[in-house]
Figure: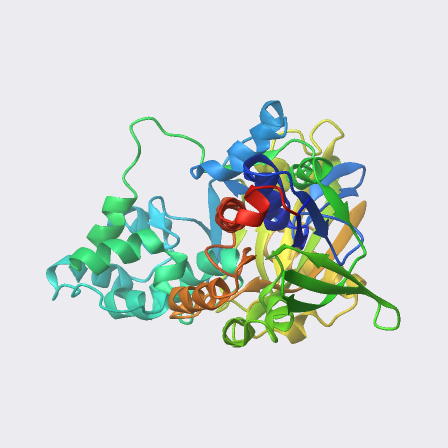
Length: 471
């Protein structure tokens, strides 16, 4: 029986393994190797004050099908939950403001809503109002950073106080460095084809649906239940670090285990669902061009600090809404706060608790995360008091650090991904997937995994020696 080894047991690796099991045209042994002691990658849940909460990714896009489909396939259909509210706040000039309705990841699409929010100055609002009458954007011939495009059309303030906090909330990056093609592909496609007005393009892409549907979804008891259920259906070996990957005449050899006592196994095909730096290290010998491209993908580190309070200690409670976005231009270190008990049903409400979490860390700000856990909790408490007037003592807290967790999609990222895949494709029986390629969200990672798994399955189908059972 041929063996396919998947390296990495995050959402991409587990989704790929499940896809391989269901689509491979021949009987195949599928084995997932994971370096850490647990599955899930950046999907992880912990108990805080007795409540299960996600301390990594806490939501998935519900308007892409892959995430919801995966949840239903593993029996979680009845446990899907949707936000109680998505009305977020933005901190600007020392005050909290409502996030304007109808923005495209912060790019304004409604002048009236932008004015009503109070976030922007009159000068910025005038730039917004006049933008459709100015010289139109020429159809984009090449990639550009989101921040550069928005600043050209709307001014720096819109980038700093709207686009940067929303885009940074997803990628932990800077709008002036992140690729338009990679991070807002629907907008890039429209401007690439038609050019024209940025305001009108954003308005076209954010028109309310005739039958509104939830934008985000999660799973009761923690979104990371999705990876736990996926892992239950495949063979996974945790605490197994793959150190080397070599090409053999009939497949691959993987060297794994400790540096002092390595072991080896052979595989007919290998699917790498690991972060860019790890994938680069494994491909250095057999696909050096791909390895060089992967090594050039920067990452951002972050920390998630979760705290639980007694509702009776909070007085007026947290500000209304699902959370608060904090631009980098504000004199605060937290970049976002999620008011978990107000955003998701069934988290703390029955226990008389209020849970919230804060995110720290942007690209280029690794030093801000060098504090001890207790210092990070104290920092979040101080800034929560500043932005929400909350001085209560938490009954429990949890600090989760994610070193190098979020790949930075710089300008030209999609061209880089095409070069990586072309170079990997020159080595038959090998594929790559994960957050470093087509999107950092759960549905995008699952789609990437399915594409990679289908390539491997197609190779199995096309192999005469496998097709006729000679192995």
